[in-house]
Image 1 (cartoon, rainbow, N blue to C red):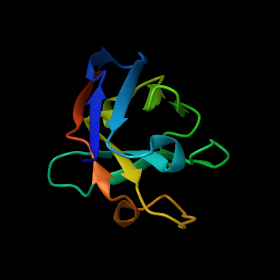
Image 2: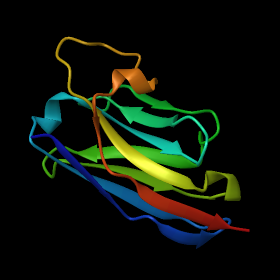
Image 3: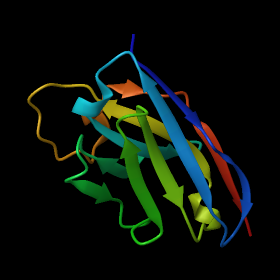
Image 4: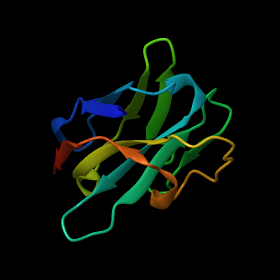
Length: 127
């Protein structure tokens, strides 16, 4: 079955960096769009970034544009989220997600488009 396993979360000071990884299995990773979302308690899960199967379309939320970078290694079935210049408001549980849907062209920015999810990893940014 489809499995997405995140790693790399932790505690970092404001201005610092973290790199999240998401290892995928159970589907043809290289064929599908991947994304990252985040959620804080009592708030909706919000879009962070997405990347198409070959990287030709990359989307970012305005709040992270210029600070976060999404990338993927199809040979390793892994998607990454490099987070630089972190701010306290970036504190959240970060979720890896996949659009395991054939013949679908996006826009790859909304929760309902993603049909496979990881368990999440906590990122805490202290001020």
